[in-house]
Amino acid sequence: TALKDFLEEEKKAKINEDNRLSLIEAEKMIDAQKKKEKAKKKSYFGVVVAGMSNVQVRFAKCCNPVPGDQIIGFITNFRGISIHRSDCANIDAIKNDKTHRIVEVSWEKESQELYSARVQIHALDRPNLVSDIIALINELKIPLNAMNVETRKDASVMIHLSLLIRDINLLEECLKRLRKLSSVVDAFRIGNV
Image 1: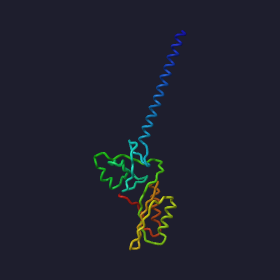
Image 2 (image 1 turned 135 degrees about the horizontal axis):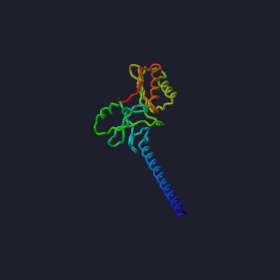
Image 3 (image 1 turned 135 degrees about the vertical axis):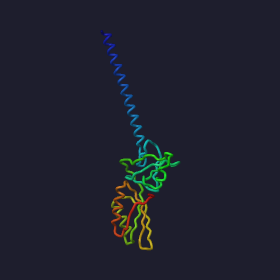
Image 4 (image 1 turned 180 degrees about the horizontal axis):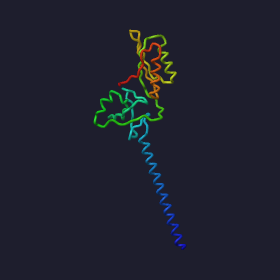
């Protein structure tokens, strides 16, 4: 019986060892799967490219997408993936292309990136107009990247702004407030749409 007990203990030890090894292998497989999922969802400049990792991403200057816009990716020949707004006129021409160069992209949920948005303001010229616009932008804590003011012969002003925006909601709030400024006729986002 001592031999029988010894063999029984050895058998249990072998089963426990096999279970421990299976558990370690399962954990390794789970870790590998998690790494694979993380690689698929890695963000580049606040954009997640479906099924791809380590790709070069750039934002199309024609439409300047910002978080909140519906976006689409286009695989370029030499410059990685170009991110466009879904309603961009340049991407509309390519959507029917059957070369499979369109790729699914989405905005990262919690991105802290800033994105360039171009705004055009049409207003009647008046004293302190530009300073009122800058004060409003500062009040919203939006970085002003560039500003161009063109005075016209008809006493109107065309102002182009380049703002650094975190999301579409802030841009829409900015446009709404700009339109309420005295002598502003209209304020809108510009881009090839």
